[in-house]
Length: 402
Image 1 (spheres, rainbow, N blue to C red):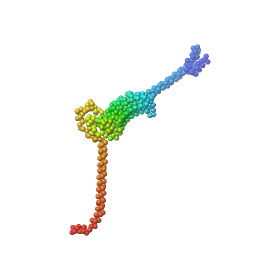
Image 2: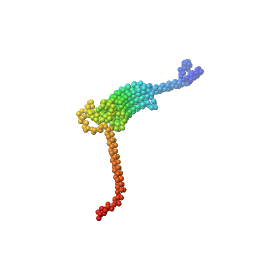
Image 3: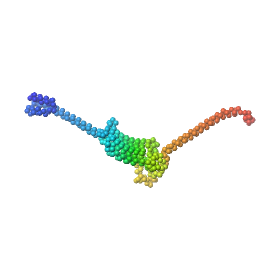
């Protein structure tokens, strides 16, 4: 019996998991060990069960941690078709055939490259998970319109590239809530009209590119809402150089005078002005423009706000009523024919006056020199003659004294 008991106990010590050993169970039915021996067996059995439980719990913890890691990677990892660079905080998703903004982008990225895809719309929540974006490149896609507020989650956005899309128009306040936006590229689209404002908090834009579109006119109020604008590009648009661009002409002259940079506006119509620079079209040719156009543009220089045009002085279609005509008094001071011509006139006048002054100074110097030479000549040649005069010359003098 002791040999059997020791064997059973030894088997429990050797393998704690053999708590249900058939040999020990069979003997337990016929012979029971002493109470002390049974206590020791029960203690070791409890220890073995406890060890097995801890092992299972540890395995469960690791499985839980692994599941959390996998879920986190799935939620915030890089999309399958993109390449994410942690060091530069860049997500490279160009040339991947996307039709929408890819989901599950890393929230810490600051540069998102989505050019050369087939993205045709931007959902309101497309950029909810990437609030730190600073540069967004959506060039060469299939966007036909941009909904107002599509980028409102990107409060730190600085550069927005929408070139080479299919955009036909920009709605009012499309780029609202982008206080840090500095560069906006809308070139190479099919834009036929622009709003009176890009939105709230867009006053920090320094570069605006409108090249290669279908713009025929542009509201001066929009440009005046961008006080920090340094570069504006208008090239290759079918500009109609009529009364609709008179305000744009005034703004552009002032912008260039302040040191701004522009590639100019080349007229596409009417025929007599085709191919001419808008700045070189004389003001006299805009003299036939209706009073409404001139009044609106002159008023905008003082208000810098589109609300002025919705005031009661304008009719439902922007035309003046009788009270509008009366409110035009007093008339503004006449502007110079051209700001550049006026500056050139001042410069030329200054140069001519300078030349005349130099000529007068030269004449004065010449006169002084001639007078000095003449005085010296008389002093050297005529003084001895007077001092040693002939007796015939002195006699009248002596007789006069007598």
